[in-house]
Image (cartoon, rainbow, N blue to C red; front, top):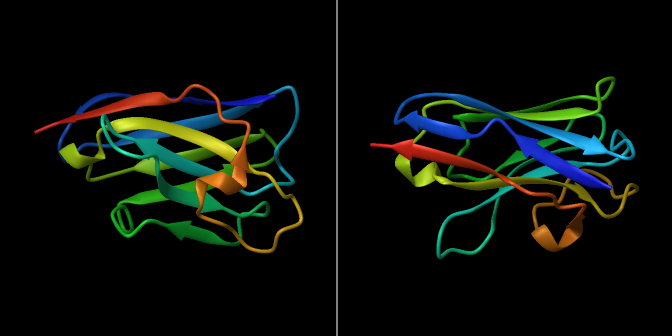
Length: 126
């Protein structure tokens, strides 16, 4: 199974995009799902994560107040609404599911996630 991110594109600074994360092969409604990003020449970094019920959220300080993560378990989808985009948000964005479906709350380290798929490129022009 893989999680496929989509919805990326080219946008001007200050603009918005909504990324979608879909699972193929199985549901991820029982797991926390996280968004991560990797800019050219940089390490993959945490962006946001949402618990399996959607009741617990966590954001990186760099996106807090601008990005919103939410999920629709009936549709087996997780979304990342990105507003007020900045050139420094340019990166390939990935979604992944927490390895452990029983962990309480959410985790932000990439090593705790699996089912990484191909990401989606977000380019923000100045």
